[in-house]
Length: 188
Image (cartoon, rainbow, N blue to C red; front, side, top):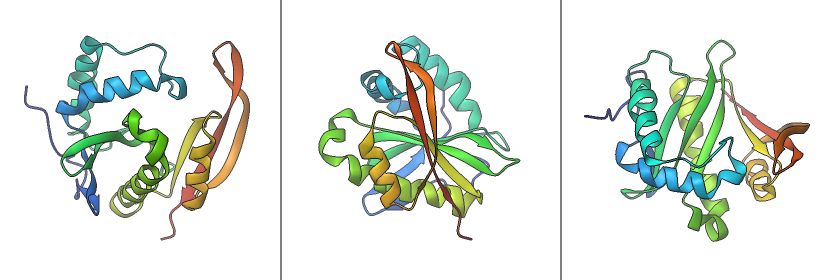
């Protein structure tokens, strides 16, 4: 199978800042992505650990089809340092009518402890280029379980405003937890 390497809907498919880039998600990165998602399942809307068969199926039958759609409901990217994938994410739950999308990002688990702020800030700068300059969205936002205070610091220092706290919105590890939503509106 030849996996696509550019989104037909986009004029620009590569967004860079120094040695860091986001490029259309690569098939070769799927097993690393599966590993990171399984390691970080505690903060994701993922019901159970992923297995190779399911990951292959998802990439071949869902992700691969996004590349040719006129208005896909998500754009997924590999986040690279040089040529090495160290994370992935994109714009998901794109609402073309209301012109907004949710930000998704998962970095290599070992980077979270000492490089969380740096990679989130870098990634946000890149995804904002896609959202505001390339696609022309009005608003992008995060939807996060209230488990990661470091995330809120990064978002707020990057110009995102806390829009809402959805009280006891999700059932997690035997209890209801809050969801925190931050957003940024395009200045153009």
